[in-house]
Amino acid sequence: MIKSHQRSSKLFNKGPSLLSKLLLLTLVSIVLMGVDFRFHYLKNIRQTTNVLTKPFHAVLNLPSDLYDFTTQYFSNQSLLIHENETLKLDIDRLKADLQRLDFIDQENNQLKNLLDVKNARKFKTEAVSIIYSRFDPFSQKIIIDGGQNKNFQAGQPVIDALGLVGQISNVYPETSEVTLVIDKRMSVPIQIQRNGLRAITNGNGQNETISLSYLPNSVDVIKGDILKTSGIDTIYPEGIAVAEVLEIYNNPKLPFAKIICKPISAIRSHSHVLVVMPVNKIVNNLAPTKNDQKK
Amino acid sequence: MIRKNKSLIISLVIAAMMNLIHINIFNTDLTPDFILLTLIFWFFKNPNAVSISLFWFVGLVTDIFSGDLLGQYALTYASCYFIAQYFINKIMLNNKHQQLVYIFFIFLMAQIIMLIINVTHDLYYPGLSYYFQSITAVLIWHVLSKFKPFKLDR
Image (cartoon, rainbow over all chains, first blue to last red; front, side, top):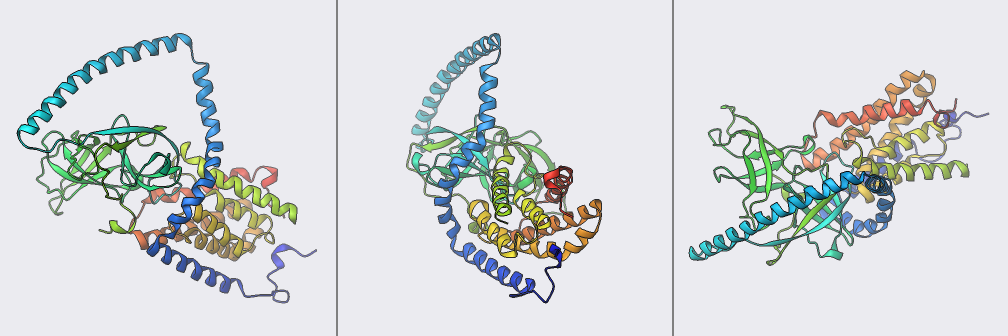
């Protein structure tokens, strides 16, 4: 009997050697990568393949959906009643807040009109569910349910109840790809809530933090400061919470302070997000793609 | 042979689905590439059933569905086949624990190739936790190899 690992015997070896095959395949791969890097044709291929894979995701999400459904179905009735009561109280409280907010909003707009300042952009949101997150340690992206069929466009901000989640970077027929704020290609113009200082955030990738770039060592930032979108970029509506300052390192040898922040939105733990649909004209700025983010 | 091919394709489809499903359950840092795990397993289970072109082709399909650049997984998997072929005698002759060292090395090489591809076009280094994937891959290999269907033929 011939053992499998004896097949490399020269007598029966036909065709090119393994090394030449590897070199050929490497060459082909490198050419494919180069062409894709330049022309982005993978994006077009994925327009069709994403439609094909959608049923698979539905099947894969079935166990967790089923688990959610059964736990909800069999949850204690008294618990539900209690939850219902607290929710009702919450709604009352929020309604009261909303009335006050409407009043303040109106007053603010009137004052802005008096001062000839452009009104803040208003927006609606559309709730969508997260289908899955991409398996890729080099980028932080999630795929949401809804794309061209819901009139999403690349560049729209994605938020949750707590704060900013990210931005739509690619739109496919039925799904969209959201780049999270912690992705290293993602930058958001922000304003510090306490003193109104404007800055730009940069994602840090895998360690799930955000850093503030290009701020001098003497900058007035303290631990616990809340960063909110400034709205001056016309992509993000103003006042959405982005992150909270976690640590500040002032090294006099370096030109800029190193400021580490933690995203406020529950980036990894929610199953639904809200896509911001601008009521005003949709801005034409695309989300950061791979190439235009070279620093 | 046909039966083997059928189970190969089925296992690859399951691995691809596991690659998609895992993120909602575990941390991204820790989960290995199940497709590569399956391919390497088949390579040692039945070296005649797989070839370098199959590795490359599976990589290309992975690229289409989940890659960042077309060709990065293809290049990684093809290189892995080459490395695995280089080690095949060492792995077949050594005991189980020494085998794991070679398996770890194969996965580490795959990660390093992926890292080189990404660093060259993106200038981004994901940090030390990136290499945990190789360790979990070896652990999964070790645990699964205790079960009969996953035992390597000797």
